[in-house]
Image (cartoon, rainbow, N blue to C red; front, top):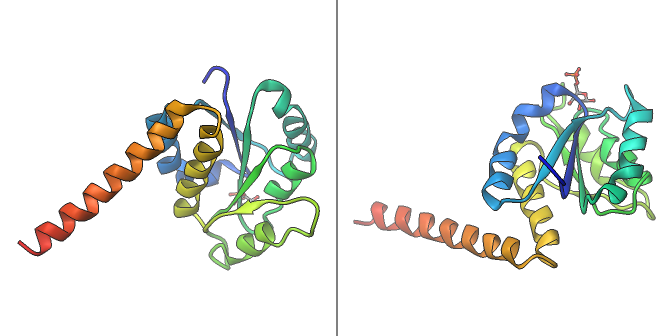
Length: 164
Ligand code: RP5
């Protein structure tokens, strides 16, 4: 996408399926984003370079998703003062619990806003990124209002159906 506002980094191509719903959501919201595979341990130089240059390229929010010893979001935050959202990827012998702790337990000074493990966290990170961008872009704010209205209507319809 041209002029991405959200930069999403995955530690591996194997994390990509966990991002599908989040990508669909960002497309619906009309917020341009890009997805890169940049490992904090396999390609540390490229990950650092990407994070350092993100603000200058017009990126407003960085998202890092990685599994197991998941230090990708922290590594992005180390090289950028943009808000960094972390998604612990599910999988591995500990089912993502290791990634959750690795992502959430940042020492003071370099924050990473950490979301739930896997697909659910990816969706919420995408929504949260939209909420950050919505602070200066009213059309994105309207997208969030519409999203919540649609969610309410769906729950109300399910309740009505169950009780009809
Ligand atoms: C992490 O290791 C990746 O984010 C992925 O979740 C996990 C396994 O990576 P692959 O071996 O599938 O490439 O760095």
